[in-house]
Image 1 (spheres, rainbow, N blue to C red):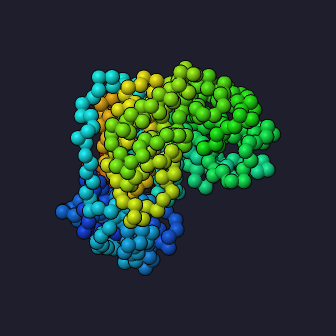
Image 2: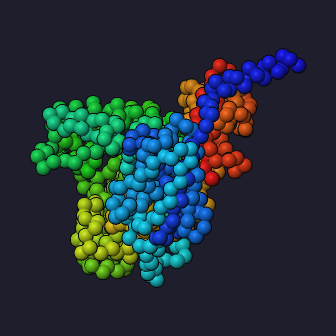
Image 3: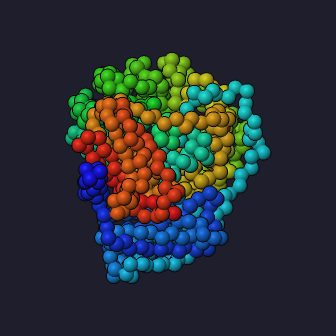
Length: 587
């Protein structure tokens, strides 16, 4: 009996060594009253930044205590909240403070301040205006009398890729908090089954020789990219990874580039695209874009032989790593490339290459636009699937939400560069929604189109004039069609991934959480594994895993509904291996 007591004490001692303990906590309570209504189904959160605008950042959900009153008490260890020190914060919606935040005193960038008072600090605020949301919580209405209200007889089957494009808007301070709620909305509201994500390596230098940086100024860091892929799978979304080298091409660029320049470019691009190919293979990506040329760069006839030769060799090497479906970026009006024969899909970017006008009227009608669109798609079929025998993935379907957005605009990408606050250009969500309706009607009639991806689903949800459809009526049009095509979306989670080489305990997602979160860990071989949760004093409160696991990556849910708000720790053990991470439960 004494031996058991000694072993128990030693075990508890080692747990305390692995799990930091704190003798005191300090708290801060936020009370927010809304004088502007919250858009339906959203959550008020607070973004809190460490003193003097540096260091660690947290985004916490508040509780709807009563009509338009939200509150949360946050507990921290005494090494973080320091009495007498000023901290910075502001309120936001759905964890997304970079665009879905409040406008403090009419200033979108301003932060509030709070000075910590002893062990318990209270703040009370009134939220008067949301950034990029010009109406009081209401969604503008559109006329759907001319829309289809029942599925057409020739609706695509469930293999059709109902996709949403999520461009690389990575920012180091806000990115990780916005991924989970964004994917939730993409799946539950848009009814999408695929997410297209665009990591963007930066072309840092063009001349005299090109230089490409995989994690450039706006590029997604590797750890965050893996988090995106993992979270998408957790949400039951399939993934289409579409990396492209990005740079604006100056007017001084030559009409075509020499063979030596392209050889130098391929040398820079090769390790980048092969690295992405390895990520796609390791993390179960469903479709992968192979591109050779910079974004929005049409290869000339003079360049075609060298580009085609380099690209085919490089794609062969990509296929040695990635075993899934390959899409090759396709420009119908460029030179013929044998590269297209190596693809599973031809990827056509509407926003980059669309040469047509849907209407010449500032008040376009559905019938006119649908007729013009059908003629355009017939031409695209002749140039692509008919010639190369490959189906097409249509990416970047887009229309801006302002009056006259599509009039004589052959390249919708130009819609991105206008002053959103220009009152002389009024909002027109009807026009934007109409474009999505005619596209889905036209696509349902063509079996050579294997998927469609809307441009672009920003992390923030706003009612601005950009082509993004988030929180706009066009989102509901797309959701109607996606719901018809896939009435029951998949919720499967991939539990085992190939090529796990070591033990690894990942940060839970989301964090902070209320009341559930997902913990991910990987096991390289068949091992006895334990995963336990401890409170701030080192006391074990839950055992999530205690069994022999085979090689793979695993996802485990923790439900904190029976526990108090505060800081907790979860710990993975196997033999001599131990790893501990901190997470925060907020109620």
